[in-house]
Image 1: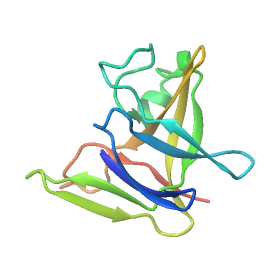
Image 2: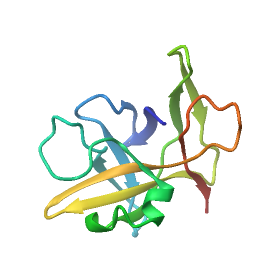
Image 3: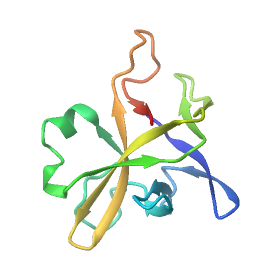
Length: 136
């Protein structure tokens, strides 16, 4: 489900994991810059946005995110991490020209970013959700 990411921000390489209460993700702005936003919401966090760090593509298309004014965004990360069935971490490169799709949700002044997930195409995939990787 993409439990961690690696990205460069202001010349520093950052490795971020969702369980960390201070987890953030880079979001590509319309002007081409990068904005850092809080990655999802943990159950203990204050706020009204959905708990978790992921948004299923089918639930977005079904309108379940509409009340949070979802905006699709590009997450310029270079790698992401998934754990296998034994709990071992595996890192996957995001090749040039590709990016992970994110969703920025808001409630009043609160804004957070979620990783958009899809059902994996491989029948023997470790997880039932995989980050949606796009080109362009």
